[in-house]
Structures are given as C-alpha cells and as structure tokens.
Image 1 (cartoon, rainbow, N blue to C red):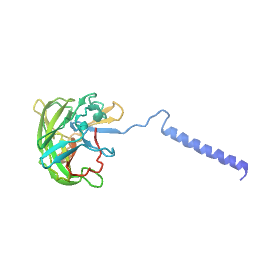
Image 2 (cartoon, rainbow, N blue to C red):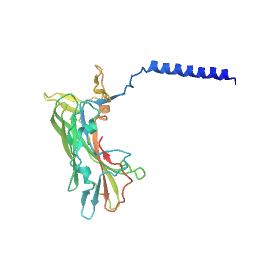
Image 3 (cartoon, rainbow, N blue to C red):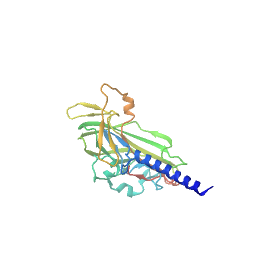
Image 4 (cartoon, helix red, strand yellow):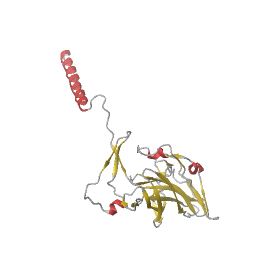
Length: 274
C-alpha cells in the first residue's frame, strides 16, 4: 500500500477515536462521578444478631458446640466468638442515621440444655414504641455435606414464641436476650441450630395507637452519603397483610452442634458482622 494511503488511514483512525472520546465526554462530563444506586431501608423495628450471622467465603470455622451424650452436656468452642466486642456501626454503617461507636457483646451462654444470646433491636419506625412482640423461632438442620452450608436437611423447627419489648423511643436501640433449646446430636452427628428473631408486625405508641408494618414505608439512602428521603405510601392503597408479614425485618444466629466423635464439618464459614 502507498505511504500516503497509510497516512490517510491513520488520520481516519485518529478522527474516529476523537469523535468517540467527544461522545463519551458529552455523556459523562469531566469531573462528574458515577451516581451510586440508592439503598432502600425499612422504617421499622430492626433486629440484628451481629457477629453470628452466616457468611460464606471466609474459610474459617464457625462457632461449634460439642454435645457429650454420656454426660448430657454441651460445651461452646471458640470462646473468642463469645467474648468478642462489636461496634454497632460495623453492621449498620450503611445507614447514616445509625448510632456509631456503640460497643456490644452478644454474651452467649449455655446453661443446662439451653443457649441464650443477646439480639440487638433498633427502632427505625419513626414512632415511639410503648410495646410490641418480637417472634422467636429455632430451626435444627443437617448441614449440606458437600458445600458445608448449615442450611440443609430439616430436622425440627419450634413453634414461634412471643418476646415482648417496650419503651423503645424512635431512634433508640436495646439488647433483647433470648433462650433456645439445644439439640442432642448422636456421637458422630453434626447439626446446625438457627435462632431467629423477627420484628413485630404491630407496635403500640405511647398514646395507645397501633401501627402496623408496611413494607412500602422505606427510607432511600445513597451509599456513601448523608442524602436520604422517604417514599410515601400512596393514599388509599392497600397491601396484603401476609405479603407484609413475610417481609418483616429479622436477624438470626447460627451454631454448629456436633457429637463428641463427629468429624470436623466441611470448612464452615465464620460468622462475621453483617
């Protein structure tokens, strides 16, 4: 090909690239940052079990409870999990309105054939709560032998138990202690115990007015900023109560309970803060 032809080809390529760059700059002006997608957070009672929620990919062992069938006793392994102090901002940091710097310890304890743990309750309902009922459930499963996930074959589930709370002003938080029965695995058996606590469907304000949960009452927050706004419920709109109840906020704590002769489970991920 003639040298002049190569020159014209090169000039054409430069012009095409320049036009593309101009188009990009027109669509995204210099200095303009990408707008992050907003996060929707329910304005209601929020339930958390910080530090004890199942998370995948860490490669560390989860807290394990060993059951001794001969003595009918349970022993919690890995005391560092039990005594670790957590920062409230570590797991609610996405919400600019959440309190920061609050120290919290789950205080796990085994007494007899039960285990108790503190859950964290925060009132984001924008209403003072004079009284409400949380719902406690426990589920026992056989972990998935392939993936190591504690969520596998269902062994048993408890009847929901009511856990009352009261005098929780808007924006305040408190600790709620719950107690659950421990399973009795066989000498070589491995089970997982999930303790779940769900937010109330109805709260009662100090003047006696009941307020029902509505999933459409949310606050929209842009990640990495303090910009928030509230999406209002359309006047006259109704929502199926069952749809609402299925979307109540909740938290859970997962423990592995195994017999004294059970082989170590398949690298169960550690339970880390939200």
